[in-house]
Amino acid sequence: MVSAKRLVLIVLLAAVGGGAYYYFSYAPAQVGTSAKAEGKGEKGKGGPRSDRVEPVAMATVEQKSVPVRIEGIGNVEAYTFVQIKSRVDGQIIAVNFKEGQEVKKGEVLFRIDPRPYEAALHAAEASLARDKASADRALAQEVRQKELLDKQFISADGYSQFRTNAQTALAAIKSSEAAVENAQVQVDFTTIRSPITGYVGKVQLQLGNIARAADVNPIAIINQVHPIYVTFAVPEQRLSEIRGHMKSGLLSVEAVPSDSKGKPVGGKLVFIDNAVDQTTGTIKLRAQFENLDNALWPGQFANVSVKLNDDTAALVIPGRAIQTGPNGQFVFVVKPDMTAEIRPVKVARNEGDLAIVGQGLQKDERVVIEGQLRLTQGTKVSSANGRAAKSDDVTSKEKPSKPDA
Image (tube, rainbow, N blue to C red; front, side, top):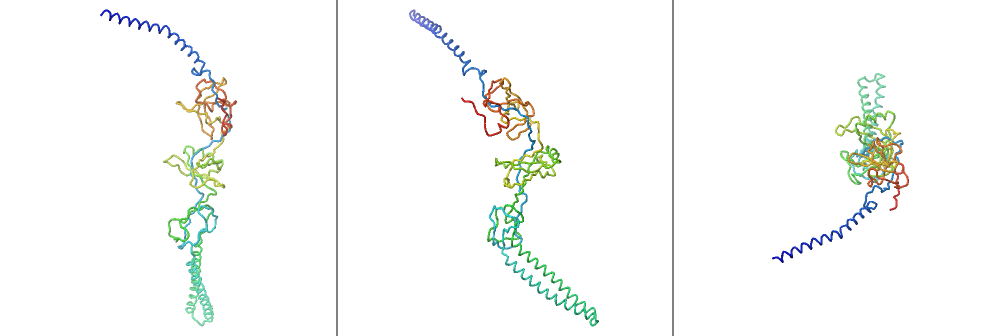
C-alpha cells in the first residue's frame, strides 16, 4: 500500500513540473510573437483603414437651366380611322392592295361584281326614255287643246284633262330620273375607295367572298397616322399648373415608344379632358405629333413628357450620385481636405440621367458618383479620373477611367 501511494505522488509531481517547464519555456515566446504580429497589423492590410485613400469618381454640383416637365405613360392612337364596309351585296372580284400597306385617299380598294346593278341601271334608263316619250306626246296634246280652248271649240273641263295628263307625264320623268340616279349610286358602290390616307389592316373578306351591306364586321380598317395622337393621364394636382401654362400658348410634348431607345418625337398638347377621372384621380390629356417618320404607331405605349417651363437656377448632379439609406436619400460630398462627408439631400425631380437637388448641396461642391460602397464618414479619397467631372460629362456614354491596381 505504501509503495502505491508513493508511486501516485511521484506521478503528480512529475506532471506539475512538466507543466511549469512548458509555461516558462514557451508561453513568453508566443506572447511576444503575437504582440509583434499585432504591431505589424496596424500598418498592414489587416489593420484599421483610417490611413487608406480610396479612389473615387467625382462630379461638380452645377447651376444650370433645366426644363420643368410632367412625365407619364400614354397610349398611341390613330388620328382617325375608318371601317371599310360594303354598301351593296355582291361577290368581291378584286382586292387592289396588300395588307398593311399605305393607301391614298380615293384609291380603289375593292371591286364588287357590278353586273346586277348595271342591269338595274339600264332598266331605269329605259324607263326614263319611255316616260320622256310619253311626256312629249302629252305636252303636244296639251298645246293643241289649249289652242282649241282659246277658240272656244272645247270646254274648259275638256282641256283640264289634257293638262293633267301632261303634268303626270312630267312627274313620271322626275321619278324615272331618280330611279336612274339611285341605280347609278348602286353601281358606284360596287367600287370601294379609301376615304382617307392611311395604313390598311387585315382584310376580313378576301377575293371571291360575298360582301353584304348588313354585315356588322368591317371588311378592313384604315388608320391615319399622319398626324397621330398620344393620350395619357397626369395627376389632377397638376391640372391648374398645366392650364396656367397653356394660356401663353400650346405646350410642347415629347414622346418615346416604351420599347424604343430612339430620339424623342416632338409634338404639342392639343386637348385637356373636360372632367377628372374620379376612380384614378387623374386628368386625361392628348398630344398631337406629325409622325412623318412613323416613329409612333397605333396601339403602342409611349413615355410622354410635357414641358411646362425652364428652371434657370437648378442645382444639378448626376443621378448615380444619389444613395438611399435608412434616413432617406444622401450623397457623399468631397470636402476641401479630400475627405468624404455623408450629406442628406432632397431630390426635387429627375431629368434624364440628372438629378435636380432641392436641398442639401451648394454650387461647385463635389460629390462622389462612383465608389460609394467603399466610403464612410471621414474616409480619405482621391480622384480616380484626375478631375471632378461635370454633369455633361457623366451623362455621356464614356465612363471615368479607373486607377491601375
